[in-house]
Each structure stands twice: as C-alpha cells, then as structure tokens.
Amino acid sequence: MTPIEAPVRPDSPAAVDARRWIRRRRIAAEGRADIGTVYAATLAVLMAAGLLGQPLVRVVWPPDSPGDDATVTPFVGAVAVLAAFFVVLRQLGPLSVSRSDATWLLPAPLPRRSLLAPALTLTTVAALVVGAVTGIAVAGHVAARPAGLLTVATSGITGAAVAVFAALLALTCQRRPSAARVADGIGIATGAGCLVLAAALRVAGDPRLPSSLVPPVAVLVAGTVALTAGLIAVVLTWRALEDWPTAPIAEASVNAGAYADVVYAVEPSYLTEMSARRFWRSRTRVRTTRLLSARRVPPFIAQDLIILRRKTSRLWWPVGTAAVPVYLADGPTWLLLGVVLIGALAAAGLTAESTHSDASNPAMLRLLGTTGRRVAAQRLTVPATVAGVWLAVTLAVLQVAGALTGPWWALGLLAGPAVAVGAFQRAKASAASVGTILIDTPLGAFPAGMLLWLLNGIDVLAVLTLPMSVGLVTVPAHEALGWHLLLAQAVSSAVGCALLVRRSGTTAGSL
View 1 (spheres, rainbow, N blue to C red):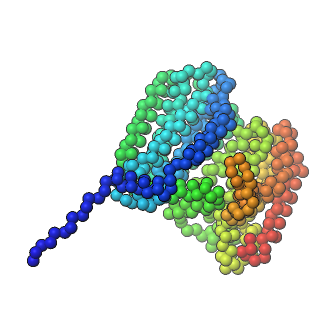
View 2: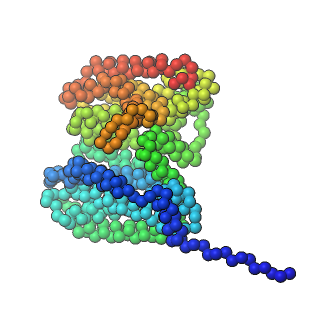
View 3: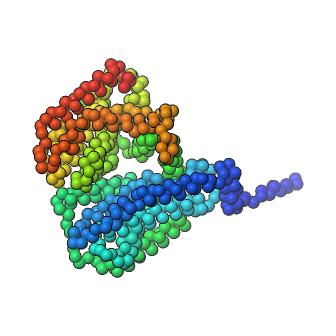
C-alpha cells in the first residue's frame, strides 16, 4: 500500500491580520466617524461645560473658606461617592465589549488583551478622574484658604488611589462571581450608611476636625505609593486578561448593549424589565416559604411580602434616600418636596414588578378565579405600608433636625396609600409610545409618548398628596402642623384607593 501524505493546511493568519481584516470590513459596512457627529459631540461637551462648569466648580471648591468650621462630613460624603462609583462599575461590567465583538471575536482564538484593553483603559481613566475630583472636593470643603499646590495634589492623588482600588475590586468581582454578591451588598450598604451617618451628624452637630492632622507631605507620600501600587495592579490585570472566563464578559456586554439600546430607542421601560430579570437570575439560592400556603394572609399580599423579603439587599437604597431630605432642609422648598415625593414613590415601587406582571399577563389572573378589585386592593397593601413608613421616618428626621414641627410622621403614614396608588399606576404602564406627535427641542425631536410615560403615576401622586405638599410649602418650621391637613390627607388617600379599586373592574385581568 502506497502511503499518501495528508495535505498541508496553510498557516492560520496572525491575530493582527485577523483584526485588521475585521476592522476593514466594519469600516466598509458602517463607514468612518462622520465629521458632523464629531462636531455635534464636541459642541455638546463645550455647551455643558459652559452652562454647568461654574456651578460644579463651586460645589467642588467653594469660594468661602471653611476656616475653623471644617467637619468630618465631607469625608463621609467622599466614601459615599466612591461606593456609588463601585456600584456603577459593577452594573456596567466593568470590562465589556460590543455585542458583535462578544459574538464573533470573544470566542475566537484572538488575543484577549487587545480586545479588552480599551475597556480596561476606560475604567482606569474613569477611576482616576472620579477619585481625583472627589479628593479635591474634600480638600475644598476642609482646607483653609489660600490652599497651596501641595494640598490640592495630595487630595487628588489620594482620592485617585482609592478610586483605582475600588475599580480593581470591581474587576475582581467580575472575574470571581462567587464573591460579587457579598461585595455588591457591602458597596450598597456603605453608600447608604454614609448618607445616614452624614444626616445623623448634621442633626446631632458635625464634629470639627482636630487641629493636629497628619502632615500633608506624609499623606502625599502614602497616596503616591498607593496610586503606584494600584496602577501596577492594573498592569498585572491586563497581563492576566488571557485567562479571564468568557461568561462574565459576555454578560457585561449584553448589559452594556441593553443600556445603549435604552438611550438610542428612548425606551426606559425595557431597562426596568432587564434590571428585574438580572436580579432574579442572580438569585440562585431562593428558599421556599410557607407564607403563600397560610390562609390568614391573602395570596397577593403574601407574594408581595415574599418579593420584599427577597429584595433585602435593595432595602438599603430607601434607607439611604430617607436621609437625603435632611441636606435639603435649608434649600428651596420645591426641591425638598420633589425629593420627598419621588423618594416615597421609589420606596413604594419595590414590589411594582408584580403589578406590572398582572397588567402584562391578565390570563394568569383569570385562571385564579379572582376579581380585579380584589387584586388591586391586595396589591396596594404592601406598597402603601412601605411608602407610609418611609414618609413617616423621613418627616420625623426632618422634625428632629428642626425643619418641621408637629405630627408630621402621622401625615407621612396617611400619605402612604396615596403614594401606593401612584406607584400602582406607574407599574401598569407599558412601553413608551414613540408614534405620537414629536416635540421639537434644541437637541432634536422628542416623542410626546415618552413624556407621557415619564409622567405616568407622577400626576396621580401630585394630586393625591396635595395636602402634604401644601403643608410642606405653607407651614413654617416654627409653626405646628394643623390637624385639618391630616384629615384632608386621610380623605385624599381613601378616595384615591377607592377610585382605583372601583376602576379595576369586576373580572381579573381588566387592570
């Protein structure tokens, strides 16, 4: 038998040639960057800098010197900002690629370093900028005037070092999903806890900074060493990108693409549904409960209670936002009122996905053989309780701070059902309609359906909470709240709930 040699397979193209070929095909299909797009983006950045630059500079570096009144609150606020930065990085990846690259290039035998290097660079630069600005803001609120270059450099370098380590922690959580849930919970709890601590310090009296602080030179040296170590860790992370698993990067790419779709298609309702799916997909250790089998608790109330219990990690957000109105007690009344109402609406929306599921899938309710009025009445119970407790705590804290006088906590409890009605109406909203009349703005056409979607539920909230709004606007801090406003708010909440239950129909699914 004559042996036959196997045909020699040609050598596979180099990775650089493969990426060059892909880049050429992409440019041929999509074209290069349009000069008009570059001009519009540059003009938008310059206009934003011109309009918001001066107010932001005053926030970061106030013109008035704190002198001997420097307190520890700016340091607590800096920790909250860095914790929020960590949470944002965890939501975005932080390492991700486009969905086309995740489909074709990520599984391909190409160097993963060159594919993920842009995302790693962007994350590092963002950490340096956010950390430096945060550190300079702390120095602006505690340093005496005039502040030298040493003080500014020390604060900026130290803040950048801390932010880089927060970015490294986010990268570690993305590579090791087993530790991600604990780190995410710690980040959320830290941010919310700092808000609560800052509010408590403001109510109790901010302690002043001690006069004998660490010398700025020592802080500068320590910050420089920490920043150098962080950048070396980033380089080591770049060298280890070849060993990263594919699944976390692909999931981050899907999430980043979904965020881009929301911005491009102006469809925020999709973002809410995606967030709910992502939350429940990560709940791999859900335990069964006997609450639904208990005859003493109605089934829909029991379902909302189970959802609330399994969203324990998200309860930190309402706890943290309850402290925000304390910072606005001395500001404009309309801003305080807006924060109170929107915060209560967000607290009532913790169980809104069950109402949204009822509205989008009415056949399931018909199979249960219940009426729409009974469903609406039960769905209002848990949101009304959560919103009432949130309002009572928030208004009580404002009363302790001296901004309010009288039984405001009772007014908050009475306004809870009214807020629940607004949250119910908002949860029933479907996708925003973009086929309606367009509204011309300097930034382009804006669909009126989108505006209506944004106002859905807020209009009901504004009408039903009118007595509480009137009380916040008209009652000064030194005057006690009148009982007639409590009676008016109780009547308004009762009428709103009754009308909603009555309009819910006599058959399930006609929500």
